[in-house]
Amino acid sequence: MPRAEKKCKCYLDNQNVEVFLPIRSVVKQWKDRRKMVEEPLFPNYIFARVDERERIGVLRTRGIVRCVTFGGSLAEVTKKEIDQLKLLQTRPDWLETVSGQHFKIGSDVTIDAGPLRGLCGQIVEHRGTTRLLVRVSSINMAVKVELPAGLLSGAS
Image 1: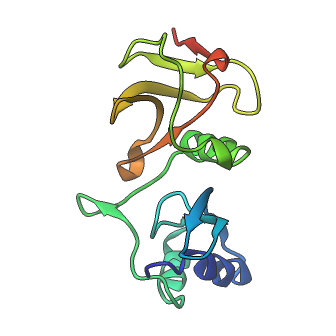
Image 2 (image 1 turned 120 degrees about the vertical axis):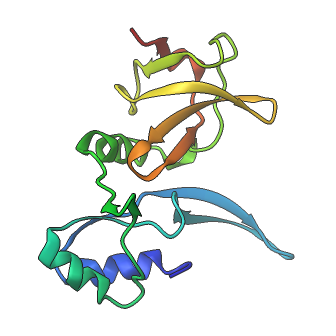
């Protein structure tokens, strides 16, 4: 259900289901103040490792509406995609835009240094700025990452 991802994660943790909820840090502006809050990287998505029997139990969990499917079959997120998302979680403050104007738009790159070493993505342009796009193709989603251009190298 909308805006219930953290509660659903707690419910699933209590059922001993292996769950991953990627988050990002965002500054929210109210009338009287600004505050740094954590919100889901993919709104309305929680990643769970379950078999068919456990899936039924997950669907009965309060706040869970359905499992993501494509073409009638369950979406299976690869271990590599989950590992990349977990790597991104080490620096949630970097999630959004990328600087690195010396890379050609559309080129594949790999992060060479720092906490995100080994993460692969593609340079894209969006609204006049250059960003690193990390794809999670299993669910047709992507993450934009902001990081120092010096950490990037062209992928082979």
